[in-house]
Image 1 (cartoon, each protein chain N blue to C red):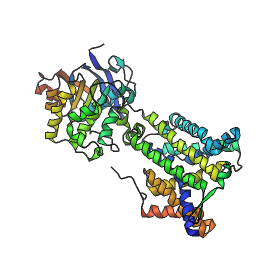
Image 2: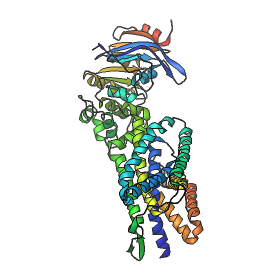
Image 3: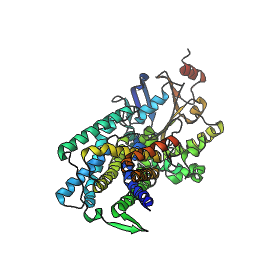
Image 4: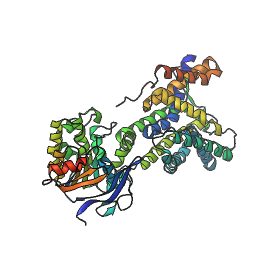
Length: 287
Length: 235
């Protein structure tokens, strides 16, 4: 039963990792941009949530109403103002620029909020639980997982059933020809980054409620996001959810064996899958 | 309103590091079908990329209905009513046949063309509307590429090497369909290596040679000898 408990808790944790990863996966899919600052943007969203809750006294989940649009606007501005200038045939400039951005965000947060660990106070929600078949499940992890499923379903639906998603796919396929269809790729990329950071905003708030955070933890979140994306297979959002779940389960089962093994077990699971299935478990079938 | 819908004046264009077009002067009259012929590397595709805005050009070098479009982005040019059927079809592989057509029409320009009319023109596409565009044969893909351009209800449509890589029987079908397409008051530019086909559907022809216009004339009266000379540069 203890083992089953560890697996279930890990799967729920995987929902949070999938939320970290979904935005990363989306922008890589649309514009082949690897965003090294993605983890720091998650942390930025958590701090925005902190500021909003401190200023207004709102519950952190209600702060989403402010944080999510703010992150979307930041994403659009970041893409149009900076990242679009780095995109081209060469993959190196966007890597370097987002790496620099990562350093800037970390130090900016350090300057404004100091290095003290912070946490979003969600009150009774943090400790509430429900009992299912002898297992005690926290309401917050269950809620996080449900949000992850809903977000990935919504992204999937947007991609395949809206004109915005059609524009994303067209620009991803062939930028020149997409321009001939009247699509301004710079605008489309801006919208993709906005959507990615909307998801990042949700992820940041849920992270901040679940654990304490400080300006330095972005890199670790980026690694989890990368691993979830790669395990699931590039370009497959449901695969990303599966990747998050596998990573989460590996971590909690590892921690169950020895508390010091939590992170190592996750990385080992990642390496194992990379060795056995280099393209991930569910790669998008090449056209 | 000028008589010409499109005019190139002293157009210089570069393909990567070398200059591909040198002072090209051309015009397309409203409602006419113009053919542009020339050997590989003569600058035909660079010319198409310049007109559509995929390559930026100097001010005043390309006029569309008298408006300077030389410095405009491709999406801005497309919104003015200029569409292209690109060389090698270049459909969107992630999009279904129907989505490839719909995305062509998303600018919302008014005109005779709709999904139903494209399906009426190419009935086979209606049966295959839901499949990925990559699963079609080459000829069917060309129909989608033509339909995609028509869906934007353009005032002028550029056809870049539409017979390239297709079986002769398919090329015949495509060219048989052309009068019905261009007959809707549209202007058209046809870029071709197949000179006979190009001359048969056009009213005027330009020949490009090494980035310069080497010949201009009426398609019906121009002689084979003149074309050979302009095409290969043999005196």
